[in-house]
Image (cartoon, rainbow, N blue to C red; front, side, top):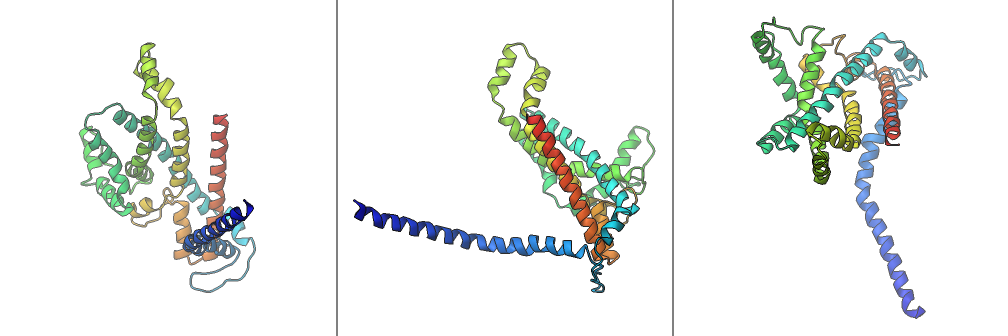
Length: 302
């Protein structure tokens, strides 16, 4: 018995070793790309944040935490950080609420569902340059559709992108229209996973549509809502493309995001070391936001 089983054990071990080699061989290209394009830039950028490296190649001397101390006392950096947080607040709320309303309408049998799904999600597939150009036309003070709509209600034209009181609102509107389709799909998938028997039982008990929504739909959507909020906050903190393009690359004290300030510092001001330090201050903020969101979600789950 042992003589017949021994070769089987050896053979099985050989197959397992071969499978491991094949697995590592298949993983190697990804690991190389991961190290070259993610791990190494992170480590090298962290090193640069402690130097006075310039984009021109000058400098590179070790300055310790001087860049970080300068960043913590830089009013422009904190102003850019405040703009980013303000945009995150203004965009996250409608991107969650509007997506939920859209998903509920489609899920409840809105006529022409395929058309609504297509129209809701299509903007998300467009490039930021296309979105920015569309909304630059819409917000044009002379011929834009936004002011044409306001004129029907007797409201004077607004220089949406030129006025510091409205340019951030304009960017938020464009962003909501552009990205709400992704959240809509997540909500729609979650709604379709709610058992129909729950609504049928509630209807038998006399619960109307609103009662079913508040007592069944919203509680069931709690986990996906937490996920959408977290993803949306992280996405909004990365504001750059649409603001930069819609304003033509012009810096504004009311719309300059932290990423734009990092770009201006490194590629316009040539201060690579200082821009790297700002990047890691911003990175720390993202980690803090993620941890807070995780703690809040965990407490709600308990």
